[in-house]
Each structure stands twice: as C-alpha cells, then as structure tokens.
Length: 598
Image (cartoon, rainbow, N blue to C red; front, side):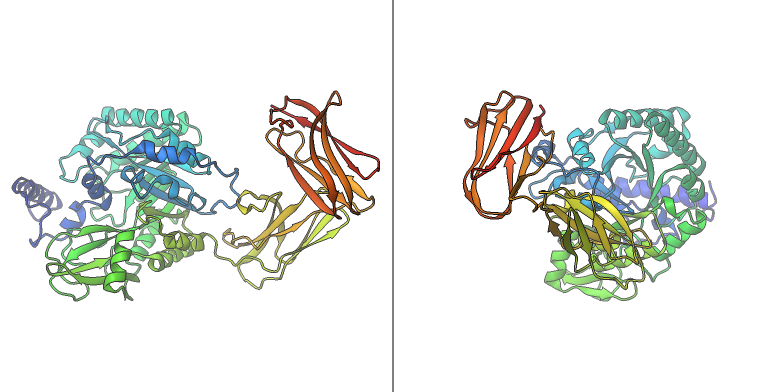
C-alpha cells in the first residue's frame, strides 16, 4: 500500500475515492475535504466538460455550408491581416445552429481556427470525428486567409487511464500520429492541435516523445503545416516539460482560465488578471521563465465564458454549495444586465449575484477584462492571443471590438486629401504626434471597397505625402492611408479620397479600356471638355455593330460605363477582339481596342 503522505500515495487514494464517487453517482465531489493539490490536478477542464455536455448533439452541418456557399470571398491577400496570431477554438456544436453558424465569425481578426474536435481512444484510433472533415468550412476559411487545424483529444474526465495507455505505448502513439496525419491531409487542412488534459502523472517524457514524433511527421508530410498544443494555466503536478515542448511545437495555447473551476470550493474569477495565489499574470511569467522567454511560441488563451455557482451568501468569493453551470458570454452578458454587473478590482473581472432557489454568484469575462489581458499579452510580446470558444459571443460585437483594439492600437491618419497634377495624384494627410508611430501604409483600389484595397507604398513617419505616378487617365482611384506602430500593429484605415486624372488637351477623349483584356466586365471611360451629342458604340473585328452604349446629348464631365460582354439582344459575345468608338457631334471618332477572354 503506498504511503498516503507521498504523491503516489495520494494519487492511489484519490483514484479509489473517485471510483467510489462515480459508482455512487456523487461526482463531482462537493463539500468534502480534499488533500492539497487534489482538486487542481484532477478537475476536468471546460474543454472536456463542454465536450461531454454536448455529446449526442445533432448538428446540421449542411445548413451552415449552404449559407457559406452564397457568400463570395474577399480578394486575397487580405489587406489588413493581424500582425499577431489570433487562434480560436470552434467547437463542432457551434458549427451550425438556428441562431449561429461559422459564417458569422469576424475572419478579418483571426489567423487560425482549431476545429474542436476528433476523439482518440487509448490505442490511437479516431473514435468520433464530430463532423470532420468539413471541407466546405476549410475552403471558406482559406478563402479568407485563415488556417484551419484539427484539434484532437482523449476525453477522460473519469480518469480511466486512456491517455496514459496511449502515451505509454510507442505503437499506439504512432497509430494516433498516422490517423491524425491522414485526417488533416485528406481534408486539406493546415495542421493539428493536441488537447490532452489533464496530463496523467509520470507521462512527461512520453508526451515530449509523442509531440516530437507528431511534429516531425506533420512537417515532413505536410510542408508548412502547424502543430500546436493546448497547455494548462498551472502545472500543479509538474507533469509538463514547458521548455522542451516549446522547442518542438509551433505554438503553445495557454488555457489561462478555470483558475476558479466548476467544482471548486469557492466562487471567484475564472481568469483573474491579478490577485489570488495564481492568476493570468503569474501564468504568463511562469511560461516565460520556463521556456527561456520563447515568446514566439506562446498564445494567451482567454475565456468567452463564465461560471454560475450556488453559494452560501452574497459575499464576494463565497463558499460554494454545489457545482457551477457554465455560462457562455452571451448568456452571462444578458444576466449581468438583468442582475447588475459588478467589477472586482482585485482580479479585474466582472461578476454579479442573483437569487434562484438560493444565492448564486456568476463570474465571467467581458470586453473590458479581456482588453486588460490583451494588454498583458502585448506588454509581454507574446505571439498572440486566442479564445475558448468561437461562437460563445453569438452575434454580439464588443468582444471582436476589444480584439480589434488589441490588434490595431494606433489611431488612423486624418485629413487625407488628393490633388491632381498632370497624370499624377498627390496625397497629403495630417502629421501624427503618436510616439509609437513607425510608418504609414498607402492603399489604392478602383472601387470604394477598403477590404479589397491593395498596398501600393509605405511612407516613413516623418513624411505625410505621397505621389502616385501609376494613375491612369480616366480611371477613378480610391485611396486610404493607415498608420503602423512599433509593434507592427496597424490602425484602421483613414477616410477615403478619390481622384480621376483627366486629359483636357482635347474636346473629348476615349481612354484605354480598364481592365483589358477582360472576362466578366470592363469599364469604358471617356471625358468631355465640351458638351455635345455623344455616340459610344462597340464593333466586332469585322466592323459589324455589336451594341450602342450611348446615343444622345451629354454635358461636360467624366463618364464611366461598365460593359458586360453581351450584344444588343442580350446574347453572350464570343471571345475575341472588339473595338469601342466615341464620336461627339460631327468630330473624328476616337477608338480603342479591347480583348474579351473566356
């Protein structure tokens, strides 16, 4: 019999107590005396609890995919990709529902999505795919510049030893690697995330071996793939080799939540920035110390949920009388509006009490508390941030706003103006006194669509002007300017300005067709320096009239006519060469050639 005073002895006694609790139907254990460290080591994380709670949920995957199919992707590369990593877990049950689906995410603020999850058994087999592979979702995310990873876990909330069995066996480890590699490669995804928790005692070395072999396999067989690992806020049992794992994997998602957990003895902040014996600041410093300040590998994962505990009284941090219920952000937000949101200065998190068959106490995170933790990630120069879990904010936008502020801190330039000088456009804007300003970015596009704009120049902070010599006569260009700070964060775009260079040396002029050659649609542009009767026509290579676009009086102005390649009867034109002619009054026709591709 192991000595109860030893670590191994405590684990044996705890295993027996846990088995009895499950058999008697009293798990989670409540109101019982626990040895120091027991609850911290043995409690189940929110990831595993939510997975169990949603087991058996029927998801209408096709519904979300059909919505996604109607949404054309924005052009790539993204104009404003985040300069930090932003990694979100997408639980399979949030893929599609009556009120929410994956198309509602703000993809402009994400870099990676971990699809949660597939389940492994102790022999390394995938026993539940939970809808994977979702090739429609992967294509949707890829079209928006987002990488998709498959999250794999071994749910073992009753400590049956499945995880230890897999990690102990080289055969089972390799089988898991082969199965995960095939699942990711066949789906066209970008990598894998491992969420093994809680880590069994004595598996530190085996976990390192597994992650090294897994990472090597993915990097070899899927070049450019990403391997990440979900990591605990606190390594209570010393079961994780932070330093070695940081050297092996591409990223470590620090689950900086559940400091006060579902079955804990007291209510309190789920993710305290400060205060208490352990908090998010302590966790970040712990990782920095143990990884040798390997900030490029560390992602600060934060909660989009809270806990609702039954408590003895309305006193803050009071003793619990039962297990908490998880409350996703949208639910906690609405409850706080009803019952009165309070702010805890110690932990920098919101909370409130309410009555329901006794006193209940809710602690959660909102845009303010998350912003303060984003500041910590920024100040610590971490690789980025993440969240458990995407979709928990529903259609609310304030959490996205807090994330945008973290990614884009510096104010946008103001007072942007554009002046025409011959065939060039001169841009000017107001000087900024922001100390963090490093340089400006200038964007341009032929439509007033900032999300589609192309970067055309970077300007050092001492200058507030740019001359665009690449403008084209007759084409309207729209311009925006952004500012970039010392950390590489980009501001929002300035208000747009537009300019259209005009050749006024002639009474009328037909400009080059733009774009040309073209497929779907092109623009025919001309200027009139004097009013007159205008005839704008399209002819084929044989000289036959295809279509008359304008026939009538027009005043002095600049004109743009979109041309869809169909004839006067609405029939599609064949690929080939066509001619556009412009004639004003009895003047000489101006002609341009255009090439239609199919």
